[in-house]
Image (cartoon, rainbow, N blue to C red):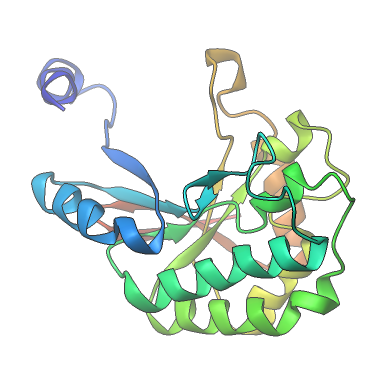
Length: 206
C-alpha cells in the first residue's frame, strides 16, 4: 500500500492508479476481512470463494468424497450465506468458479438456478454487482465465467453493475479477451460496464 501511494504521487498526473483487493472469503473468515477492509482506503473489492470449510477446489480437496450435487450446492450455499452476511464488497467474482475444477463435467444450470437467483437478487438489492472473468478462455472452458445462463439471469433480474476482468496472474494475461467479453455482454443486452472509484461504480458504454 505504501508503494501504491508513492506511485500515485509520482505518476498520478499521467495515469490513474487505483487500489483494490480480492477477498477470498468463507463465513468463518468474515471478521478478518472486515478488519482488513477498515484498514485501507480501497476503490474496489472482489468478493470470491476459493474454499469451503477450508478445503480448496483446485486440488479437489473440497470435492473429494462428495457427489457432484453435494459439492456444487455446497459451494452456492456458502456464497448465499456470504452475500447475506457481508456487504463491504464491489462485485461478486467469477461466480461459478467451481465449474473450472469440476472433474465430473458441467453441472446443469437448471439444478442450481433457484440458488443462483436468490444470490443475485441479494446482490442487486444491495447495490452490488458481478464480474465477467475472461480467464475462462485461458482455462479452455466451454462457456464464459460466469456462464452465459448466469449473465442472462442477472440481466433479466435487472442487474446492471458488471465489471470485466482478465484475472491476470502474469503480465501477458493483462487485458486478455476483454474485447470479446464486451461483445458477449452486448449480445445479452447489456449496454454498460463498470469500473470503480472509492467503492462506487462508474458506468461506461459498451
